[in-house]
Image (cartoon, rainbow, N blue to C red):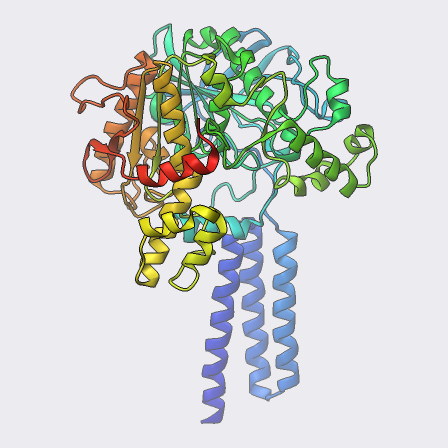
Length: 594
């Protein structure tokens, strides 16, 4: 009986360990060789352990367990997922496009498996900003001989990296859309050499097609251009050319130094990522006609920090004439005191000096010699657009009030639960709600507390989530809308609240709808989601083409001339009235809105 119990215990323990370690190898995206070696190792362990079980040599069985665990750890590291460039389209040996001639040379892309979209990936729009070009304004790209095979995306810009298993768990816990696959078990490359852009165009497109240029988000610290939710495939299938780009992030994009300012012939520092985006827009003006695009019909779009960048570019004299209209999703820096992604030059210079001290450097030359991997840790200290006197002469709110701006029409908005991912581990309850409110609102706290009476932990959790989202996302859009109205810019604002099995209306949850990229086979979305996506991308397409989202059989989207009229995208679509004006009034007084 004892021996039988021992055998059952061994089967249970070894089976549990086997499944756990197999899951680790899968979630960590280890190579197929790693999975195979672990299966062989496990089979060997069971054979050896069975032999020792008969002889009851418990010390030997312990050694067998330790050997199994040790070999697993060895396999984990020896078969670590390799670094591989991300292919522009899925599938082996995709069809190639025709050869296109641009200012730098000839290039050839690939066609999506459905034969509807051409993708040209990894096109350099500036010289690699490495070595002496680290913290320099972007330089004109070099030409090449022969035909550039634009079939893989370029490396993502330097940014903090997480273990592959952490990324997989994020997909499971945050996005609920992890897929087990034996293909492409690898991690994407990361590099300072990342100033490349990508173009999606319809295979059957005519000339002079409308163009959308998209700037990815990520707090100006992280992100990459190839993410599925905002891939250009969805809109390109509907007759739009889509362009997006990598740009310098973190310390590489937003470090500021008086020495660099003196070194620059333009007297600029701290806005290298923003200047990259301007350089990409200039590339579009010079080259998009070769893809069938109309350089006089360019819409600039972005989400989160990408949207903050768009609002800065609307106020930049360097971006004048590079786009006609803008789409801003879930961020602007057009308020009196932008809550994120923005700072004045004095703040940037002080922060930059502190960075130099932390790395033991007295000069920029010494800092340029610091390996990129060491500077990645500074992403959280250097991720702010700066009023540098070159790319930005004044803060965006001052620019608008003086009547200087670059866009001719605006589509913008935010989601109902923007705060979701940001306060996931710092939510409020009945006990700490008042403390959180007073910690942020100070002398205005009593007014805020009267607006949000709470009687339970759930009340407190919901109220703090709404307040946090309003402060960091909703209110800046309210400010931006008022500025636009004051300057007679046509402006359309939305409010996204659609729940689904994935992100729902959390921050960035609207993108997959607007860009028409809900996966056909995904069970995380139902028919109402797919119908909503058709409506939302329909508005997008109309706006990109004409500057007005209305057309066809879509419900009328009214201009937000009173800064209160929003188009609601939820279970139903229609105009609603903004409900947070009382809180916005408090924030106006806190921030000195004029």
